[in-house]
Each structure stands twice: as C-alpha cells, then as structure tokens.
Image (cartoon, rainbow, N blue to C red; front, side):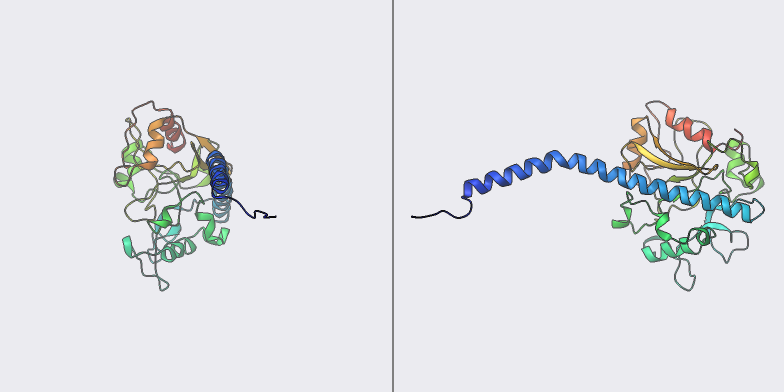
Length: 270
C-alpha cells in the first residue's frame, strides 16, 4: 500500500499563507515591544548621564560641565561634556571624513566620560542614523545648561532670552522641570554639533528634537530624574522625519503645547 510522505504543494502553500498572516498580525506588536525596549534603555542611559552630570558639578565646586562640544586643546572649552570627532592623535575630523570611531572617541575624551566609562550610554538603540550617517551620539544638552559659548552681547541666550546660561548647579531654578539631556536630531556635521537651542518667541522650533519611541522622547532633568515624555502635536512628530536642514526652525501649525513645554524647561529665568 502506498503511503504519502510530506506535504502536497497546496498544503505547503496553505501553511506558508498562515505563517504570513500570523506574522502580519504580530509585526505591529513586535515593533511596539522593540520601541518600548529601546525607550527603556534610552531612559536608563539618560538617567546615568544626568547623575554623572550632577556628580561632576559636585566635584568641581558646583560648576556645570560645558554643554557644547569643544576640544581639550582649547583653554576655554577644555571642560565640555563631549569633544569633537577626532583621530587617535587628537586631530579633529568633520563631515563625511569622520568615522563612527572618531565620533565615539570624541565622547570618550569629553569631561563627562570619566564619570560614566561607557561610550554606549551616549547612544539610544532606537537611533538608527549610524546606518546612513555614521552617527553615534544620540543626545544633546540645551544651551541654557552652560551650552552657550558666547559671552556678553555675543551670547545667544542673552540675545534670545535676556539671561545668560546657567554656570553653576546652585543657580538652577525649578530643577525638576529644567532638562539637561534630550534626544536630538543630527545636523550637517553628523554629530549633533554644539548645544541644543530654542527661541524665546514665535511659533517655530529652532534646533529639532527627535521622537524615537512612538510618540515619546526621553528627557533627563537637573534634579536627577529622567522620563519618557509624550508629545501632543502632529507637527512635532513630523519634524522627526524631516531631513536636515529642513528640520531646522520647524514651524508649528497645530498648537504650541509641545513648544511651550520645552520653553519652560529651557528658560534660565523661570
């Protein structure tokens, strides 16, 4: 008596169709789980970074670490939290010539690195830019947190807000709403150049933020806590997908809740 072994072609096609259907149903759920996992790692990263930021200040007479990106060869900017991308011998590399290793090296030679000792803390797993832009660092510090390199009349903060940036930990008013680290979108340099800035008035952003976790971004605050913040405006989410330089000075067309939230946490006067 003949005994059939294996599947017929029709049975095999049915099995494949069922598997494809199950995958189609499960894929959105798997993507949500992946975003949530990346958000949890990002939250932990920023929490560790902001604690290191506080400890640095406590170790240095409560002076804030520089929020810009400098180079140790510069007497005035040798205390920034990260340095510019550079080769092993310290030569600054910019633009397309800078590799991932050059950019990691800039993080490792910054003044904050001795307090964290892990270059992976500077990168959110939801940040996929390294695939196309050779970018490692996902986070920035706002200009109000000692990120403004100008002085006097040349200070961007003074010109925009009427107040200089914070220089010491003790100066910070309402530390629970003053953010120190945020998820930032890249610029033409490919390493989130400089500090993150925001205008005092008007219905537009200045430097763009990025939303990597659904409708959420992670922020770390000067009292040491970090949160996943949910954005309200559709235009905020659209800014994430706009290419550089289109995302710079992104207009707000559907309400200013997100913009005002960030202004409250940026303004040194509040």
